[in-house]
Structure formats: structure tokens, C-alpha cells
Length: 176
Ligand SMILES: [Zn+2]
Image (cartoon, rainbow, N blue to C red):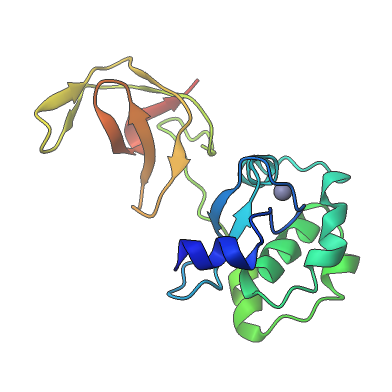
């Protein structure tokens, strides 16, 4: 993935709604080339990550669904589906491989009590956790805000004040 090439491809604009505000790279799926990545504005990204979509905002999908870039195409397809617009999703042409990526179920991550955790949630730590290699402990009761999903199974990624970026086991977290 080459960040500069993606910014060029996108003309420094959100590749969904063309906003130029707070744009950054978003991974639709992992790929060595740029195909799995899109440039998104904060507004689009927040809606995608919280899965809380404003249908009007995503009128832009009428254009982006015809993109040649697999990542943009797949993302458009997924948002149409999330909006309940399978009539639009059905009009799209995706290769078998793209379809497999688009329909891949996202892993459901749960806290110690079985509550589903989502990006942006706040959690509290239910027991003292040693941070390996850092010689520090995250004390029981510590509140961690704005958790992120990550590739490490059974973990979420987050920033703990005074310690930094860590992966925490979800079985030791409680959603608040
Ligand atoms: Zn956008």
C-alpha cells in the first residue's frame, strides 16, 4: 500500500462523498497493492465504523458503486446492504473474490458479560493487567475510551493514558 498514490488517486478527496475535510486512509480489506484501501473523510469513516448510517449522506454511492477500484466498490456494496438497499447492491458487478470479501462476516467481539463491543465504545478493566514488556500494570477499574477493533484474536486495540497503545483481552473488559 502506498499512501501517496492513494491520495493522488483520490485527488485528496474522500473517495465516497468527495469531502476534503479530515481525510485519511481506510482499510476495506488487506492488500499489498492500493486496491483494498480508500481515502475517506471523517464523516464517512465515523458512520462506517459505528455502522450508524445517514442515508442522505450516502447518495454519493450512486457514483462510487461504479468505481473501478475494488475497495471502493466493495465498500459501496456493503453500505448499500447496510442501508437495506439490496436493489442497488444487486445492480453492481462484483467478481467472486470481491463478493467473498464483501460478504465476509465481521467477527463479533464481546466483553466479559457477553455485550457486543464496537469501535468507539468505552470499557472498564475488570482486573489488574500487566502490560508485557512495559513493566506496568493497568489497574482494575481503569476506564478506556474509544476502543478499536484489531487483528489480534480476542483483543481490542486502545490507548491507555500513561501507557500508550495496547491490545487488551476482551474477556477482561466490561462495556460501560
Ligand atoms: Zn466522505
